[in-house]
Length: 215
Length: 215
DNA sequence: ACCTGAACACCGTTCAAGT
DNA sequence: ACCTGAACACCGTTCAAGT
Image (cartoon, rainbow over all chains, first blue to last red; front, side, top):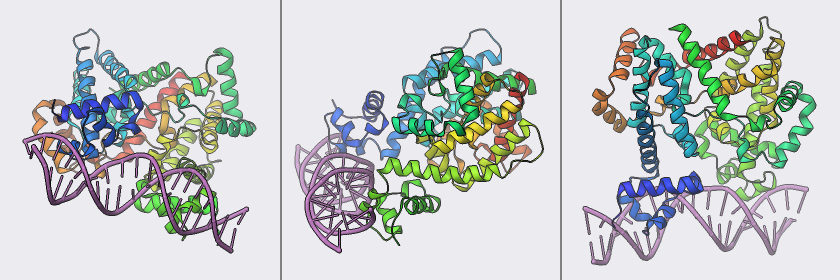
């Protein structure tokens, strides 16, 4: 079974899914395909091209999922909300994807195509081109289903930073107050244990409602 | 002149400022300080600790700038807006900073402190802790003065992607329409040449106004 | 056309050894 | 206490050589 660009990209995605993006090395991909690392260079120009290809595979999956949502009832806001929350599902399946997308400087056709459809939804909802343009900027990566969290709790805050924070607590009256009230209302949650899905939807709706008002 | 953690961190920041984050290597820092790369390990645990330290230096500069804005007139919204746009100035001075902050998983005290002050402003403006918490999520990294742009024009889209896009143009009716209208109104701009400052402020105000309405 | 072996320049990091 | 030399395991990538 010969190598191909497609096989290389799929192997890379599989490695990223199971072991994280930093495990995606040429040697490792080669191993997964029972080939030498150098053989990959026949199907892929270099590592940057490899990453571009991974984005293409990801976005194909995303666009396919998102198109399945079409034809459902609702106005532009409901349609955009649905698409974006579907995109978010893909991101949750591939936790490495947001980080990868952020590092891409080249515009991938599939990414552009995704945004074209969003603009289409806004236009059919009565947006001017100008407002649709603002909207893309306001959404930023949220349009693709993710928002970068400054504190990543799942990565494990670590004893060291927790000790640092404990030492600092008296200098953080507002956060301490906030967190203790939230912990009181919902013992499950701290700043590190927020309901990410609920917060994502809150922010998304805040933006979509704000745009609605400017329409 | 002996090495010190501080000298190491400052050298690292200087390299990042002039040559980019990927040029910050142990060997390169050593060279800048006329020392061997291995000597750095006496003052810095490893590269992750080095990056944490760089964030600390950056955030010290940011918190200092932002505190200078205090005592100016205005309500919570004006105060937050001012702080966040000041933070943005720091990010523009250090283009590598957003990317670095996104990769940090540990909570740095200076970052937490910055957010504590934001919560304080919101509280004094009549926010419940719950809404202030939502607000932090809605702002995301925008609170620190940056938003990740999916398309980075300054990095140079590259001939290859431009050709790709030209081939794709007929599949992108909405984006093509949007861009041509924007180009008509403002011949300076394309999707790649947006007024980043204006778009940042639009999005920031959209969120702040939305929060105001929920208050 | 497709794959590989040998090699290069570069990483981060360890550790025993120097002063 | 502070710095270094030698070394290790790992990268991405090139290129001449194999089939």
